[in-house]
Length: 394
Length: 53
Image 1 (tube, each protein chain N blue to C red):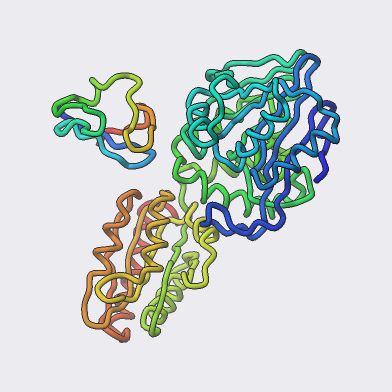
Image 2 (image 1 turned 90 degrees about the vertical axis):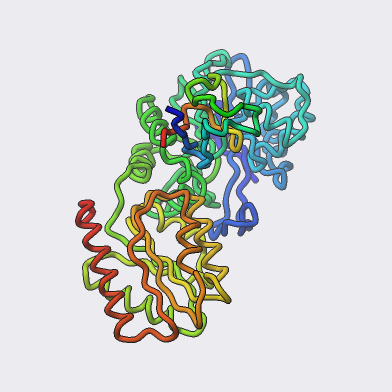
């Protein structure tokens, strides 16, 4: 890997993971990712902001060696997760004078996850500053920009915010700065859905706090740097707001075609009513795309066949995940079919205990859908439109 | 009184009628009487992340 100078004395020294295709053994990474680490050299002291995934620790070290960095005084850790902190043991070994600068909660987690020694820490509080000579770092504690210990670091004189996971995107690109905002918008939205969405209410305040800072750029820990900061701040303000769109996400599985027919009918009925529809066949869906679609949809319809007595396990998986990600959806319903019995609807509705939704009357059919089923699906489409109208979403 | 509070981060509910067995908090303790540095026993969120039911 090769380091890049951002401005004099500030370098990107991280690693680009072009090959990585899955994160946490859960989230697909269609565009790879990057682990951004930044070196800041002041007139007196040198600081490294975050490290890289331990699989890339030698790239980080080699970047520092090639820049002839002989001493690192501070390693600022914004987040204890291993994709940013995992190379700390090696950094601390290579730079024996380096001190880890972070908040108390993060220190606790770093010791738990990496078994770092107590005596290598300097604990900072919210809004505390750290002088590097002619440059000053200011720390803002921002719990729940993924984990409870997350913080962001602001470089005052250069007006650069090192936001760690917040505002990031899983993109592996050789472009240091965002060049194609359209492409990054989708990628950052997907990342928000996967990582930030459960903490929407906490993040809302942070977006306003960041907006109030004089900013030249936002340098996250995944993806490219934003040199036009209102682009990502406006996008986040929209995503964390309570506003939902006139959209219905249909997450479905069909075993013998009955549920498929119902989904097709409902899709057409919703389109005919001017509602945007996003159907996802879960057996061939990238769950990151499903999560992204949940960011601002007003309604989710879960469509499932019945396996033995309950919903299809793929549907259970997607419902569990959607509930965990806590989207701001307002309405939900369940449709599907069964062979001889079962309680698929009850099981699905019970799973949605984390999202505050109103359940619109479900449509279940025994066997193949008939005219009565299609009329019931029309009624469901009417109900959804009426609810969207009542909530002034249309 | 004896209002229930829910953690806005993980959804865990503090029910004063039962207290919090995981933290040895006895039944009958109001949410408002919990210490300032009290944290959610499930996710560690601070008190201010709790919303009244």
